[in-house]
Structures are given as structure tokens and as C-alpha cells.
Image (cartoon, rainbow, N blue to C red; front, side, top):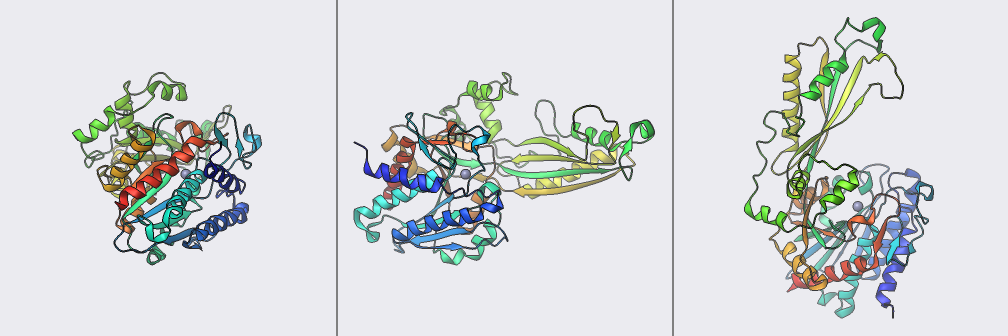
Amino acid sequence: MEDPVQQDMIEFLGKLVAMPSISAESDRAPDSLKTAEFIRDAYANLGFEIKIVDNAMAGKNPLIMGKLGNDASKKTLMYYSHYDVQPASYSDGWSTEPFEMTPQDDGYLYGRGTNDDKGPIVATYYAIKKLLDEGGVSSLPVNLAILYEGEEESSSGGFEDTVQQHRDFYDTIDGIMILDTSWFSDHRPSVDYGFRGMSYMAIEIRGPKKDQHSGLVGGTIREPMTDLSHIFSKLITLEGKVLVDGFYDDVLPLEAKEQALYDDIEFDLQGYKDYLGRDSLLHDDATTTLMNMWRNPALSIHGIEGAFYGPGGKTVVPGKVIGKVSMRLVPNQDPVKIAELFTKYVEKVFAEMKSPNELIVHTHGTGDWWYGQIDNFLFESAKTAIEDYWDMTPNYARSGGSIPIIPFMEKLFSAPAIGMGTGQSSDGAHSQNERIRVKNLVGAKEVLYRIMKLIGN
Ligand SMILES: [Zn+2]
């Protein structure tokens, strides 16, 4: 016997997947709007006061803002997700049509957005519906707020300005549930308590006023690429230590409480190596690797604008090159301060090089890190709910990536956030054959339902 609610959830998700709300493709804007309207109408049917709000940034998809219940004696829980998806087409190597959700015998539903992030929207909706079915709005254990965006896969363009402008739509918010991550492993539910921040820098070296030929200038001028390569070599050691003066000064030292989390994490180091196709990492044990991915800062060199990169040999000497470097940052590094330290350091290195060329260091962008407090009421109730439903303690996971809107929301609403993983790590959120296990979809609904009840108690 199929569970009828489970059938409803699958049907709801299938309808959402069928709307290709791809934020990276502007001609999909009507599909995105249709998706937003569909979600708005569904929540309105639950009794939500809910509206579609124009994005403050021109040409960007709208946001959905909703609320239900205003009992001052209850806490208010906000749910964040995004209704836009990554691009996909059958010809990319999908086994099924990405925008026709296909249930398979393996217990998974295949389709773009099933994991990221339409599945989590469906799980949230049915968790709330289950509570309402039990006794209506007055019996809800918490007041509810919905904040869904349609540009997450395109750097959340316009999100901060739009939410700031409409802050007054919401009353007090006590906790923010981020439903936009997967379990860190395939077998154990995860809660997320941190993301790294970022400073993205550009190092511009200007030499001769246009590109030259090495037959003409090789041996006669100081080449911009030579300068840039030298600067690159001074940024980081081969062992991964960042050489920028003061870079590590504000990094929070590891506390015993945090160390203990790493002792109890399910992490498949060999699987990580297999994924990379490399057997040797900078550090060979799982804990150090995880810490370097999550809680330590790092510097990466990404590319050189203006340099020759095609196949074959070309003897061009670029007149101007721009090196692209990013730094993933952790508590309590300030991304703006790090950008300044980086600029000062590169200027110092360049001065020592006594180059006749011109150096300009730009900050391409910065984003805050997020660090959740795992002993607050959100994490406590999530742990209890996961233990109750899954009979497992959660993996406490961080991510080496960056979602700057989480610290933004925490500050704007003066409320803590938690990341609740929905699908599994192997679901392929941004790649071909994205999927979610039906068991995870239903499990997420049940865990969210329990969390709301626990918070209301
Ligand atoms: Zn996502």
C-alpha cells in the first residue's frame, strides 16, 4: 500500500520539476514566474498570506514571501529555499528527460531540481500541511515565515536588497531554516553549521601598450607574465600555507568542543580520492582534510585573463595580464580586511621586484562566512528530531563553499540559522541525473514536522 501523502508529495514535486525555472537562462523567466505562482498558490491554499515580490535587481526572478500565524507566545520559524534550478538538457548525458520527473525502481525520483532545491520545498510544504491537518492555524506550534528566491543558482542576484526593502512584511523571526543542502554522506542525515566566506581578487599587470611578439621583445623588456608568475609564486607555499602577511591572524583557534565533532563524522576519504582521481592529498588523514576543507582558510589561483591559453605554440607576449585569485575565509576573518591585506602584500612583493610595469590590485567581490552555534534551540531540536525519525545522530557538517545570504539573513532578522540536509551526497545536485530518494523526501518532511513540534514545546 502506497502512502497517499507520499503519492501527493511525488505528484507535487513532479509538477515543479516540469517547470524549467533556470535562472541562468533569461528566456526561462516565464517558467520561473510560473513556478513562483504555483508555489504561492499552494501555500495560499494552506492559509498563508503570501505574495510574489519583484526582485530589486532588474531582470532577475522574483522572490516569494509568506507568513502564517502571529501568536506572540510562539516562536517564529522562517524557511529559506530557492525555486530556480541549474540548466539541464537530455543531450548533456541524462538518462531521462531532466524536466520530466521519472521515478525509478531504485527508489529515486530523477529530474532537475529534485534535490536542489524543489524537493526541500515540497518536504517543507507537507511538514506544515501535516501540522495544519492536525488542528489548524491556532494549534500550530510555531508561527511560520516563507522566503523563497529564484536566483540562487545565479549568485542570488538582488536578494539582499529585495529582502531588506521588504523586511517589514515579517514580524520577529526567531530561527531560520536553510533548506538547500544535502546530507554529507549517503547514509547519515546531516545538519550544516558553517560555510566559508570569500575574497576574490584580481592582480593586473600592465606592460607594453599592446600585445607583442617574443621575436621582437623577448630579452628586451620585463614581461607582464613574468611579473605575474613571480607574484603567484609568493602567494602560497607548495604545502598550502598562505603567505599573505596577517592572513591567519583572526582565524578562530580549534576548541575541544569543535574537535569532538570531527571525531564523530562519517567521511569517506577514499571516496573523496576516487572522486578526484588522485590518491595523494596535501594531508593524508580524514580529519585534517576535512578541517582544511571546512574550518581553515585557503587560497586558490584560478586563471589569467589576457594570457595565451589555446593549443599549440603561439609566441605572443601579452601586454596586459590579470591574475584571478580567491581566498576561502573562515571565522573570524573579515573578507574586506583580508582583501586589503592581500592588496598590501602584493604591492609589497611587486615593489621588491623593481618592475617597470604597472600593478593594479582589484577586489572582484567579497562574501561573509557563516558559523552556526550548534547548541542553540534549532540544532538541539534538529538533533532530537533526526534521532527520533532516523534512529541516527546527525553528521555535523560544514561546507568549504560559500552562501553569503545566510549571514546576511542572520544579521537582518537577528536570528540564528541552521542548514537541514534533505537529499544524499550522491544525488548529483548540479550534474546529470539529479535525483532524490523518496525515503529522503518523506524523511525530511517528518523531521521538519518534529522540529516544529519540539520548538513549540
Ligand atoms: Zn541549491
